[in-house]
Amino acid sequence: MALGSSATGVASSAGTAAVSVAVANPSTAASAISTATTGKSPLEHAASAATKQDCNFLNALGPKPICTDIPTPAIKDMSEPYLGPADSPPASK
Image 1 (cartoon, helix red, strand yellow):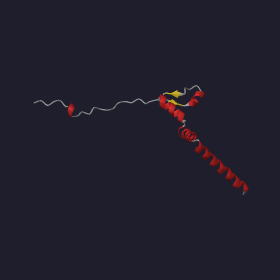
Image 2 (cartoon, rainbow, N blue to C red):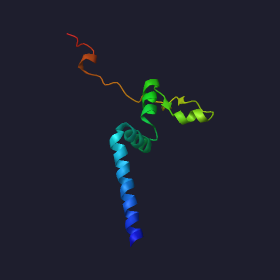
Image 3 (cartoon, rainbow, N blue to C red):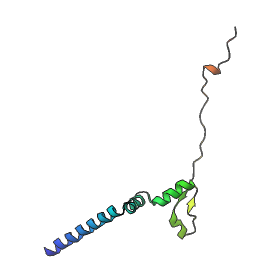
Image 4 (cartoon, one colour):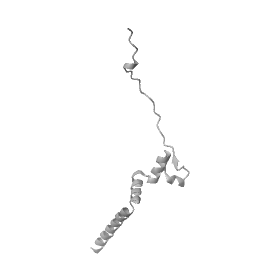
């Protein structure tokens, strides 16, 4: 029984410590949440927005460039003209 209660106490204090760190450093907590959710840090999001490219700072560790162009699909215009009353030929008198 003593082992179970001490393990619970350790887990509780670890959870309290994590909450305390998040409260003391909200930007670190936001950075961790952003990285876990999107795979990018807030600084990588800012660099991507500033350069209009996809930036990943871990690419610096390998041969890939830090920022790469975002591929855009080709767009084919399938619209048709819509004629209105002003496009009709004038009526003869």
